[in-house]
Amino acid sequence: MKRHLSFFFLTSLLALGSAYSQKEYIEVMVKDTVALKPISYEFQVSSGLKFEYDYENPNAKEEFSKKLRASEDSLTTLLKDLGYDFKLNQNPDVNYTKELTEKRNYLVKIQDSVKTEVFKSRMKAQGYEYYITDITYENKQTKIKEIYTRLLKKARKRADLIAELSGAEIKELVSISESKSEFGVITSFIENFAYSRSYGATTTSFQFNAGVLEKSILVKYTIK
Image 1 (tube, one colour):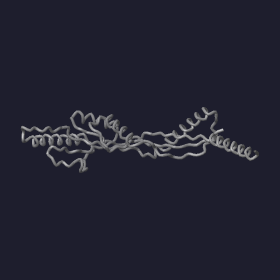
Image 2 (cartoon, helix red, strand yellow):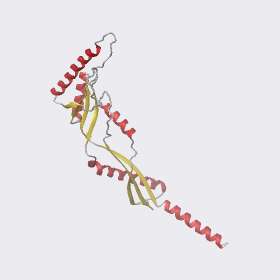
Image 3 (tube, helix red, strand yellow):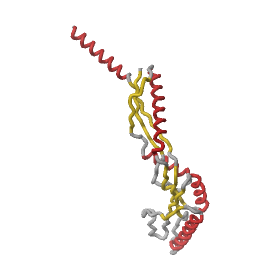
């Protein structure tokens, strides 16, 4: 009988201790993003002409080629006259031009968002095709302090809420650790697709950069 009572008493103590230890801490995970400021933009631009094969005209390709070359000459002349920093795209997958009907593609670099608005208006007016191939952003390190400040405030606010709902009170911060970001490639692509289209691009590049600093942290507090 004594042995059974001792076992029951010990089991009860362990259960109480376990329950107490479970309520001793509150652990929260928070994540956030900070937008990075764009520094420069790169567009690929080409003639807006589209080849439509005419089976009744054996010289259709040659005639279209002449129109295309004339359109491309007008494009480079326009870019020069407007003072844009541009060059022929050296990517062999883009500029192979083996066929008479293939277009030449040019890369144009623009330094600020205001000038991109002017650029796209000019390209639209002339009927040229373009899309963003690259955006250069400010260094992510410039936003480190800002995002961690936001994360810690968000973590404390969430922990306070959980403590209040549990009838407890936050005592002190015990530990902070970084966790892997849950932002995936699909999310980044969707964001960049929308961003590219917001700049009026006629097509969307698959070379993308989300332009955000992403962080996720796990924070543990003691409670009473």
